[in-house]
Image 1: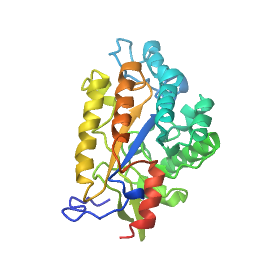
Image 2: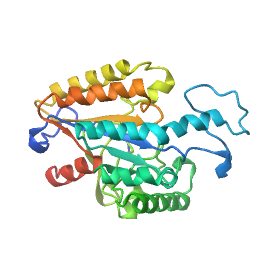
Image 3: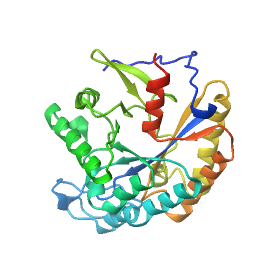
Image 4: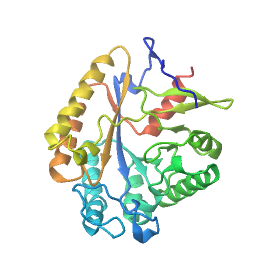
Length: 295
């Protein structure tokens, strides 16, 4: 995989989003709860990252940490869905098949409420540690599980942490996808080459991601709102001449708690108070780009 340090440079494409939108906003819910590393699942290690530091030895179950993840699937995801319904916005769920299997009501609600899905693995998996055949099986299993549980095929793929050197080749080889989001290098989709094929990348971003609550960067919903507002304001201004895309990363166990979710609610209201804003699923963005931006 060759690096591209140039990109669009000073000549970005003059994209025309639907209805002349300046910014396409991609709200992304990482639905992972129940698919994290668990000793009882035979993974060989337990998840150590949580809302508080863990004193539990690594070879023992950390029930407090597990309950933090459970909050996301029991409460946080439903709070997100209520907020999205309140403002009639469409989001994308980066979904793990095992997480959906353990809470099938969520899988049904995602589709029933009109949201988009993107493959996020069968469970939390480090593809960069896998050989090619193992990763191929993992992608096929994740795709099949997500499609079975939600009733819609995931059209994109996003790894939990980072891709392997084989990931993009295998996603293209699979044949069911139209894009991947395994890059953080632009504010717009772009094409790359996979063998002889032109391939679409819809880049993601960690700059506006609620994981920063657990890392100590954000303390309140106001922090999250202000970061989102400042990101939006910049892109909205730039979007007057060159439309942009904005990604906002959410986790049910992180921003799904009341005070933090308040920041999400306020931001959606703020953005919807501006004309020419498109809240879109990532598959919507990908399809639009494929149809209207050929180069």
